[in-house]
Image (cartoon, rainbow, N blue to C red; front, top):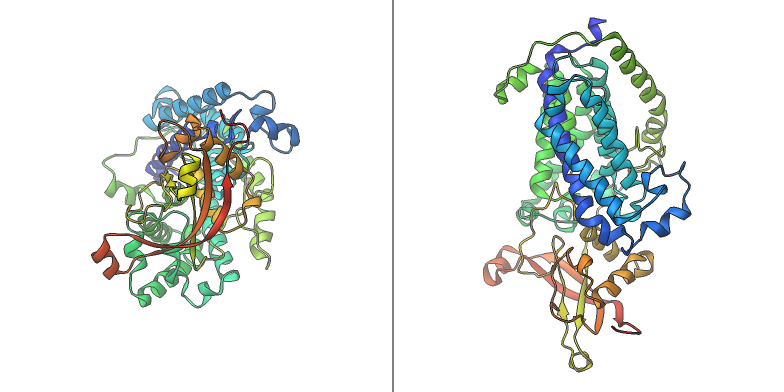
Length: 476
């Protein structure tokens, strides 16, 4: 079955596998650094409280059998080590089937984290990473020809990612149809980066060109991924360029990087050989049993694709939805609606009753989300600051919709070391505050003139109280 093999995509497979391994390494590093304070035994949404509420068959996870922070660390470190080995190409040197064993292990480990991660892991890029890892298992090693069907399954995943995002924009906010969404988006996106201020101040006609380019890249270009070369190369190139534009203009975790990695599957060795100082190795034909597995995987994806395709065709399209508990063959989408005004929740503490009476409040600083108006938005992606992202959602809704918020305030009142590691600036390094409150501010980017005169990146004005003054009933 030589026609089911793609020896001209040796570099594409190599680049896909190594790049995906880097994303998995980052994802497990995020879990190692953030899971315990957010979801651990004493976290904001403790996993031991969540597990009894869901059945194993509804949310498969190793942690159903036992959860402890130590076991979470073992899972995260195992994922980091295995990802690093794949990134270094060690399994390829051992045998052609070694990566076939490691990728499913990574998938199980990360699925176990996602399925108990609750709202802190309710992002589309978690499902994307899982689906990419599941498909990587059958791509083969460096000494065999890449399976053609698996390359097309990767392109099908990229198609759903891009086309689903394009459709949900057209069906959603009218500003996508009148081409004005980017008048606001660079300023109101969840976590702006160092260049977002400049992107926001581009001329409005150019913002309309950006939106048109987005519609073209998401609604038309993806069909070219399945065309013969060089059309597939061109389609992949356009997607990579548009995704790099998004990388430059904002922090979206590893979402854009995942799309770029998927686009590698459509670039043949002729194109990649120009950019990479590598030469494809001679490859042996795939074993018959391996080809049979790729055919079986293709049939499975075809059946499971019924639900995402129906979703894309539906006027009530769901965004970032998994139709099965394994997060395999999902529906994707992004920014079906765009917020026009930016609000931020700030947390402040007062040390004593005297400070409370005098109005002496000191603000906590987060690592990524806007706070200090004079602090330039940082570059974070592809790393993901989960608490910062949830604070963006909190500002758009009522406090009671976010049960982790009260737990966060309690942790701050106790100067909890684990949660403080997720905070950039703690104004109470010696003793915890006696009181904590949350306030809601309206943020906007400064104008060119305001930036020159004040040096500030943001202008903010108080919009009101978000959480009342809170204190521990029995302070330590």
